[in-house]
Image 1: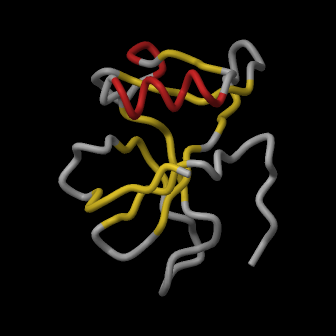
Image 2: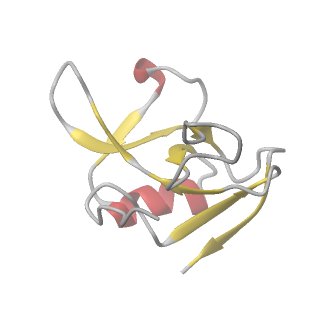
Length: 102
């Protein structure tokens, strides 16, 4: 298993997908500005719908307290594939069966 980059992955929140995969919030790079931040969204799945948050605790507040969606990914490729599971996930979403906040 690859070692997660502490600066890009939030290990304080685990999202358990219905497939059994475990996802973690990840920072992404804005190709327009170069900013690397967590991307949270109250609705929608585009950059324009999102808020870029550099601070991990601020991201956790949006996700845990305001039910915002967050960009999240598995740490490794999913079973039967060469790709990680990644996307925009919300705690109240049907595909997220539970979560753990450490």
